[in-house]
Image (cartoon, rainbow, N blue to C red):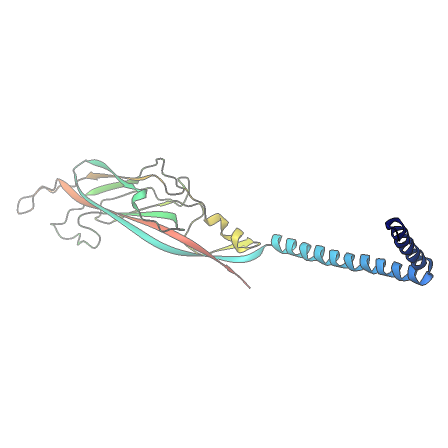
Length: 244
């Protein structure tokens, strides 16, 4: 048998078989049912996938109640120097010298200006002299919340008491736990992961006005004052806890 004859017989048998299958009513019904089931099952799977996708999308946009907790670490620096009467000095503290831990941010800076006599002095003692001291946080290019109304940038005292100053660095920082409405933990913590705050130089200006005592006896006239500046840099890291 030649190759062409075999090919014709093969094609003829296939065509004949297909014609016989589709000529039968039962076969056509089964085929239609199969196709219908295929599309129905496919549609159900597509609907289920779309519904799950929609539910996930809704869950991702619905806000939830979070508590933002602050882990605070305090870094210290201290400077002690003698001021002469009517002398004004500006002491620089370079923020890069503070070893802020990785993933921590500077929240605020607190300054204490301590006179030589210090708090708790017996003001009734004639040997105790309280000089007038004025202190200021100088406004400069340090990246901070200079317009924050809660700042205390200036202070003065002539009663041998400490002077307390403070400056908010990070926007909205108070050190207290906060609440946040956010769809997930990442977005709840996002406002507390911004770099760049607290970069630059902290400048503290201190001015001394000596209150001299002129009297006979062992008390000599005071012409200077030893003053200590204590700087506390409050750094923080945050954690978000979902409230039930």
